[in-house]
Image 1 (tube, helix red, strand yellow):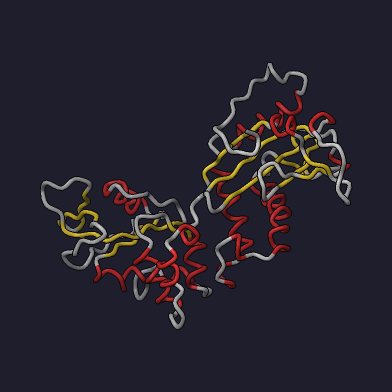
Image 2 (cartoon, rainbow, N blue to C red; image 1 turned 30 degrees about the vertical axis):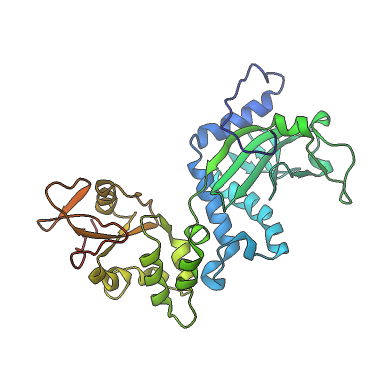
Length: 319
């Protein structure tokens, strides 16, 4: 069904040999981002840029005003151009010039809802869609040919894709895996506790790491909770959450440190990417335990959610 996300599509250049420009553009993005990692991170940055959580405390599409949601399309176009400056040149008549082909960039909040202006008709389109709640996105290429467009136009003379046009989109990533938005996906009781009235920025960050465990937590989530300029200071040693929560058995593993990533792998918990952290409680391990790590001659394992930990967590070096 055209309005539902399906598995990634495999390009058959023979089937579309009459549109070599589309093949050329598709292949350029395929080479630049074969697994969708760059596009996913760009989508995450664009959403977080719009939420502006450090100043507003917002973390959800539902918290945005209608005009702000509309602005996402502009940010998407700009940030895609910046991320893929090795593929995209500045457009003259349309948004982009890609391998000497004119390409217009279109984003829709609804899958299949892209609106094409008169100047883009007949040209190639780079389409984008994102759903933060589902942690997924989609990007693809299609030509806005006459047989791909609905009859009639809106007041701005824009038209949408018809069923044939939606079926003709050649998806680079559909669905792509969006880096998680842990605040959006968290239990409402936990979110209420994190943002409880009267808490300081440091107290909110502490509560974030107590309640959101074994999950990758990005810098923007920390910024949204702290709502302070030096928000990462609230995570660090020497007065941050790492030292405050250690007596309760918590370790906070940072994706910027190779040893921390190794420890996450050994414990069998999600491994944080650069710029992310993972919080969890640990307890002393026995010789029969699996998924353990050693520091300063002691062996540790991840503690169960309801388990009483054996004492303070170890300090894991940043190396």
